[in-house]
Length: 159
Figure 1 (tube, rainbow, N blue to C red):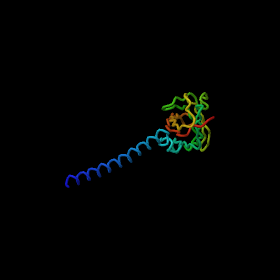
Figure 2: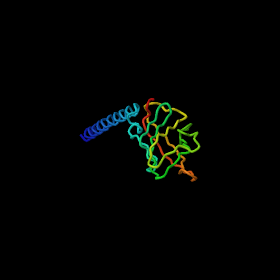
Figure 3: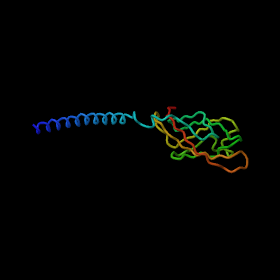
Figure 4: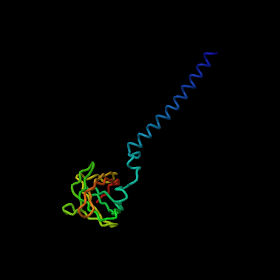
């Protein structure tokens, strides 16, 4: 009689563990399928943003699959500035608007202007891409240069 009771308890424990084992296995398979098809990609869940600080406000931005990054910037420094150079942190920047101009890319105080940056390698359309940039700027006149680091994170669009 004692032996029969132990057998029933063992069978109940085995069925309990088997049921939960199948439930855990099916959850793992579902999570694997979602991540395989890109539905759990953190980049797809994050919002687009452009941040160069409050003094150089990014009003509009887009990344194009031909390798161009368009930034519509507003100068909130209170004085006219000139952007002298743009470098990429991870991406190589080959050119930006007005680079040959010795006075740089001029932004008047409280003014808005579009800056176009050309990347060395064009990103694929549809993916989210982060482009980190270092802007070298100075106040208009005989002033020292400063660096401002910022980033654009957006879905790459077709041209």
